[in-house]
Length: 425
Image 1 (cartoon, helix red, strand yellow):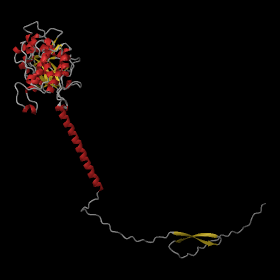
Image 2 (cartoon, rainbow, N blue to C red; image 1 turned 120 degrees about the horizontal axis):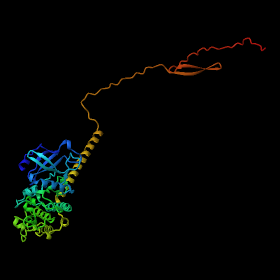
Image 3 (cartoon, one colour; image 1 turned 90 degrees about the vertical axis):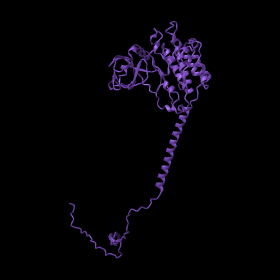
Image 4 (cartoon, rainbow, N blue to C red; image 1 turned 120 degrees about the vertical axis):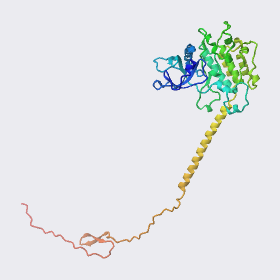
């Protein structure tokens, strides 16, 4: 089936999804693909890009059990599963007929910020490149190691409260979310615990047949002895031991146990992280060594207890985030100052242009020749004089521009003669 899974190519359809690409080196029991929801199945409440997990034929039951575990979780530090579109009820796993046969699959969120394994095996910054090479892998800063360990402890606390034990806590199963504006955020990335293929529900029968898929360097002594000694009990403290190994590797860049013999030897005690890295605080060093105790009863009793111990440990100052934020504030301040300066200079230029006199130009100008205005005497305005006549006043009109008296206009006198009258009779 592994060869058959490799036949799945970009563009192939798997149920309501279309294959975009295949992830390399993810999952020993299945293959992981990046898929896109086909247009007819898209929904506003579901993302368009997801991660599709297709199981190998010998691990079909493990994949369906893993889907059942994931649907019961709801935590930001645990990978999220999504229901398959196209069904009238929530369905989280389904079968598909491939070119090589039938296979089970489910869809989960696409966590594309890299893995803890890659951070521990290759340089991530210029400072890491300039450092001399170390034996084994690379270690994280104290701030990052403590921050990632706290998130994993919270994730384990969440799943343990639901009676589920992971049994496969390792750097390859710790992914990081890609965050927006991450250069302004904390230097500690957001960790996500994934891959519950060999997990167990402590309320039901153990799935001991899947122990062969556990990575030997991160398993607990009781996991290694379970097949040979039936009296050994594997419970939530096995995850605490694996978390101690991951924290040890983040602090030192190496594993505490080199082979299976050192792991199951009750007398062997690995060197403490403080011996390999003196800058490790004593309290954090004590937490790691307590989690790596061979006897389960000597470890922290629960994920809640180790989470509380990690939270009480001193947190180093985040110099990287402080420097990035200071640079961002300085850049914003410089931009605002530049804008204000440019704006003030522009306003001064505009004001000076408005107040200045216009400069002479070589363009032709119109010449206005003064025209002498000759006043032509027009008709004189009439003036009214009063000339005395016999018992009456007559108005005469004479031009105001002449002083020569005008002879008086003859007037017609009206004489009334009494006619014959009628006697009243």
